[in-house]
Image 1: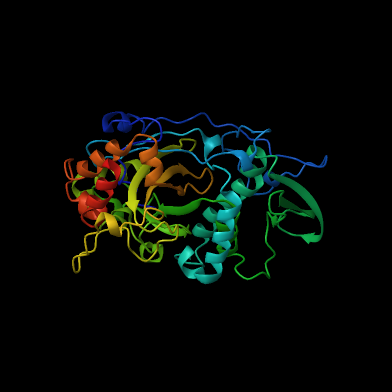
Image 2 (image 1 turned 135 degrees about the vertical axis):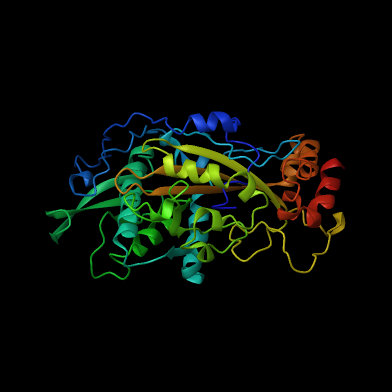
Amino acid sequence: MGLYMVESIATYRERVPLLFLISLLGFGIAIWKYKPAVSNNCTPNPTSDNESQKTYPPIEPLPDFNWETTEPLKFRPFKPKYHLTMALSNLDPSTLIQMDKTYKDRLAIRSSLLQKHPDVVIGINNETDPRIYAAIRELYVFVVGTYLPTRYPRMFRLTFQPSDDNKKTGTKTKTILESMVTGEKTPLHFDDHEPGSRTGRKELETLGTLVDEEFLILLPESSPTDSSSNQGGSEKYILEAYTTFFPSGFDTRKKLGLRLASIHTPVPGYKEKLERSMDRFFARIDVGQFVQRVNWSITTDSELFAAFGGVHGDKGEGEKTLNLGELDLDSTVLRCERQTLHRLPQSKGLVFAFHTYTYPIQMIKDEGLGEDLAAAIDGLKEGNVPEMHWYKRGPVWGEAVKEFLRS
C-alpha cells in the first residue's frame, strides 16, 4: 500500500522486534566510494561533477544475471495474528532494485499509465524548490549512472556520446545509459530546454518507466537549525516528490506536502502505536543504512494501478459481502510490497521505495498454505489493532477467500 509503511505483519526475511529496531537507530553501515560501470573501453564517470555520489556504498555486480529466466521474489508474510509494528530488517544496498522476468511487460504498463495519468503517477510538491530538485537529481544520478549499469551489466551499460557543449559537466561528451532490454537510451543530464528540466519531473518520469519500482522522496519540514517546528519531538518529514505507478488503494497526489503522521491518518492504530517511533526513526536513520519490510493484503482486482480505491475500507456505505461464487479466482491475489528506506548521502533526503508483487490465491492454495492464509485473515481481527480487518476490506472478501482456501 505504498507509503503506508505500518501495514506489515512480517519482514522480508525475519521479524525484528521494536526494541531491537530502536537499537538500530545509531547504527551506520560503512561508507565507501563506488566505481561506475563502463562499456566499450570508455570510462564514463558521472561522479566527476558536483552531483557526485561518493558516499553511496559499493554495489555488487551480477555479471551473469538473466532477467528473462528470473522468477519474481516470493513473499508469504502472513502470520496467525496481526500486530501493528514497524517490523524492519536490514537491507543489502546491492539488492535495492529487483529485476525479474516480468520487467519488460511491467515497463509497458508503466509507459501506458504515464500517458493516461501523468499527474497521478508523478508528483512534485513545489517545482521551484531547489531542495526538492537536488534530492530528485541525486537519486536519479545514482540509479541511472551507477546502480543499474553496475548491478545489471547484461541489461544496462554506460556510453559516451558527442556533445557540442555540455555545460553541466564541462565536457564535450555526455553520458548515456543504454538499455540492452528495450534499446532505450537515457541521458544522465537533460538539456535545459527540455520540458520538465530543472524541476525534477523529467527525472521522475524516466525513473518511473526505467525500473519497476516506486520512489517517494521525503525532506525535513524545516532546516535543522530552525527548532521552532520541532519543539517536543523529532524532526518531521514531508512527502515532497514521488513516482507511484502501482499504488495500492491511494492517490499519492493527496499525500504531497503532508507530514508522515498525516499521510498515515487512515491507518487504524497508527497515532497511538507508531507515530512517535516512526518520526524518530525517519529523523535518525543514517546515511548508508538501508532497511526493508514487506506488507500484505488481499485484492479482488489484480490491476497493479489502484490509485482510486477498492483496496481499503470505506467509511461510507457498507460494501456488499462477496460469496465464493462471486469471487473471481483469476483476479483475486495476495498483494505484497517489498518496501525499502534509505537516506540520500548529499541532500540527506529520505527515499521510500517499493516493488509490488502479486500472487494468485490459487498459487497459495497449491503450495499447501491455504489454511495458513485463512488463519491470517481471521488473525487481522485478533492482534493489537482489530480494526485492521476492516481497513483491509476483510468484511468484503474475507469469508469467500477463506472458504476457497479451505475447500
